[in-house]
Length: 395
Ligand SMILES: NC(=O)c1ccc[n+]([C@@H]2O[C@H](COP(=O)([O-])OP(=O)(O)OC[C@H]3O[C@@H](n4cnc5c(N)ncnc54)[C@H](O)[C@@H]3O)[C@@H](O)[C@H]2O)c1
Image (cartoon, rainbow, N blue to C red):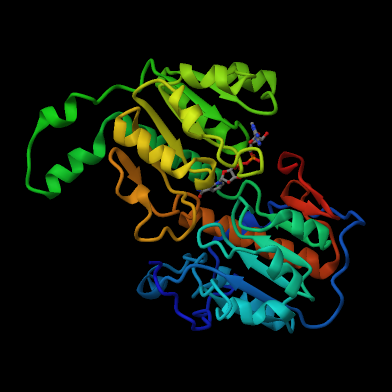
């Protein structure tokens, strides 16, 4: 069963924007002010803003820049309250008796994060009569029913680009962990064992292997750039081709047909959003056509994979290693089969919530709130739903 969430409303522990590091302050001005006419000016007066973040408990006080947790609430409480707004923060997000549910009928803005997703269903949207703005602290807004949000005329925006370095670095780490068969070696050490053969019989170099990314947007491109010095054969599939100069510099080859690319890959990395087109993309049939012994890294979204098909392929050895930090649903229940399948190197959803990533997405959320209060538009790339329309890759 899922961990029982506390129903306590959490107050920040004194972190205002003035507590931000110079890095965060600098990042704060990186988001350019665009004055387009289309954003509805927020009506004057106090707004009720609700934030749903993961709780940090004893870890909250360990780092003043740990802004992404419920206790620090992105470091914007003082700023919001000084302007007369109400800021409610909780980690209690599930079900009809949750703290979030209580505030749905009268909140104006809901800030959520993919790391502890508050599922914003059509039903919740219908109940939220005052809701205007849904902000994602991070990247990936699939926890929101985007069609229902568009139909209700809501704005959905995320902090595009905020944690792409964090995720690309993490993917590179996971590729290396899998190809070197690192996890069983680590487990041996913990268990007081020493068996070189048990690791070495299927540990390989990364050099010379074919790595394909499904999706070469911000994260996919960074990953390809970081892989270049490893002398791999790099492939990518996307709706769009990378700019030719960058493509040449990275040395990655475009594959228009996903099903032509996938069987060539020793390592597959998923870097698309979860959309109606990518949900369940890796089903039993598609996985059966992959190279035997393929390694898969998925930090994109758990629901892009068919859960049971991954379990079966890891159990048979068809997938020799599966790693990622995204699950369906989140938090993953204790009996989620990916916890128990062989050949995995899974973690909780952590890759995009490094302290550096948190500073960037906290600054980005503050910037968008500021623009919302002033009736200004957000940076165009941040919009997932605007004026009843979904961003093109979600269509
Ligand atoms: N694990 C984490 O902590 C974490 C953090 C950030 C982002 N993410 C996930 O990674 C995803 C990608 O992030 P990004 O910043 O690179 O986004 P992005 O929008 O820059 O790139 C997404 C790419 O996917 C491509 N794409 C979309 N649908 C496609 C389809 N059906 N077929 C082929 N290509 C398709 C797009 O053309 C685009 O190039 C996010 O949507 C999110 O789900 C995870």
